[in-house]
Image 1 (cartoon, rainbow, N blue to C red):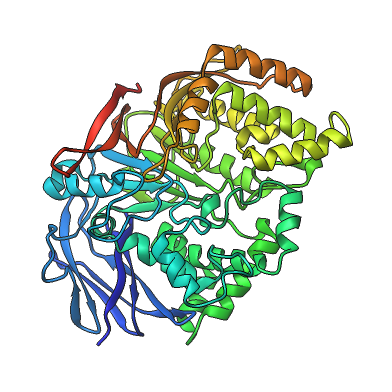
Image 2 (cartoon, one colour):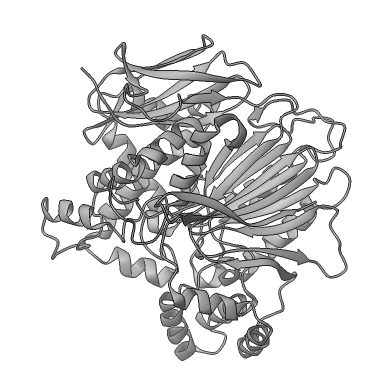
Length: 564
C-alpha cells in the first residue's frame, strides 16, 4: 500500500481550482477529495527513485473553504487519524474578499520533535499554532517564502550524521549537500515538521529560491562561478539543486494551465522515469540561464504578485553585469505594465476572484517578490556600488582583484551591487506607480539580510501616485548574531550614511536615481510580515516568535501600521 512521505502542500489556488503536491513512497494514483464535491487525481511521476504527484483540483466554489482529504490508490492517508490539527482546507477567494499576504525568508530546519531549537522559536511553527487555534480568522490567503527554504550548505547535526553514513565527507563538498538524494533529505527534514506540514497543507504558498537553496553567495560574480566550476563536485551540486527546486518548489508555483503547457512537465509525467529529462533541463538552465524562466506571476483579484528570480537570471560578465538578463528584465516590465490604462481590467495572467473594480488600471496593489532587498541601509548600498566599480576596473587591476576578494568575503551581491539594474528597477517601480491607472501601493517584498525594516523611496522631480515601500522580513527561523544587529543598526545611521558617500566618491559612483529613508525598524528576531489588502487600502504588521515562560510560543506584534 502506498504511503504519504511528504505533504500535502496546498500550492496554487484561484476561485475555482487548486493544486496539491505530495511525495509518496511508491508509484500510485493520488486523489484529492473535497467535502463540497470538488476533486482531482494525478498519477505519480518518478525522479531519482522518488515519487511525486501534483494533483489539480477543479470544481471549487469561489469564496468558500472546503475540507479535503488525500487518498493514494483509493486509501485515505491525509489527514492522519491521530492528527491534533483541524482538517486541512482549500480556501478560495470571493468577489469582495480582502486578503492577507504573509511573507518571510531564511528558514533553517526545525529541530526534531521534542528538541530545543538553538536559534529560538520558529515563526512558521508559531504562525501554524495560531491558525490552528482560529483557522477562519487568522489564516493568510497566501504565504510567500522568499528564499532559503532549505540550507544546502548549513545542515543540521542529524543530516550531517546521515550524510556521513552514506559517503566520504572528507572529499567533494564535505558535509554539505552533494546530490539529489541529499536534497530530498533537506526537504524531508524541513517540511515534515508537524506544525509546518499542517500549515503548508492549508495555506497556499508561493516560493522562490535564494543562494542557500544552492550555496551561499550563489552567482556572486563571473570569477566566483569559474572557481566553482573548476571543482570536481559543483556540477552535481548545482544540477541537483535545480532539479530538486523544480520538483519541490517551482511546480507548485504554476497554474494548471501553465503546467499543461510545460513540455518538461509533460515529458516527466509520461516517462516511466523522468530523471534524465529533468537533469538535461537543469544542465541547460545552468549553462544558459536565459533559456529558463524561474520568475512567475500570480494575480489575486486586484492584487498582482510578481516573483522575480534575482539569483539564476544574472549576467555576471563585469562589462555588462546585471541582476536580470535582458529577456528577464523585459518580461518583468511587461508583467508590471500589462493592463495599465487598458479596458481589459483583469490584466491577463492567472486570476483568483473578481478582477473587476471601479478603480482604473489592472490592479490595486503590486507586489514584487525578490529574495534580495532593492533598498538597503545606505552604507551597505554605497559599499556595494563602490565594490562594483572596483571590480569593473574603475581604479585599475589591483583594485579589481581586491574588490573581488571583498565582494566574496562581505557578500556584496544585492541589487545595489548591480547599479544599472538597481536604477532600472527604480524606474520601473516609478512608472508602475505613476499616472492614470496607478495602483494604491507598490511593495517590494524581500528577505535575506536577517533583519526586518521598512524603507520608502522618493524620486527627484517625480512623485508617484502609489505608496511605494521596500518591505524586508528575515529570518523566519535562523540565527541573528550580535554582529548583524550592531552592523545593521550602524548601517542605517546618519554617520554611516556620510561614510558611505565618501566611499562612493572613491569609486567614482554616480548617485543613485532614487533616494530613500528608513521608516520602520530595524527589527531582529524570528519574524514574519503580513500585508492585509482590502480595496485600495493596505496595512502592514510585523510579528516575532517569542517563548513564554511555560514553554509555549506566540507571535507578538512589534509593528502595525497603515501603508495607504
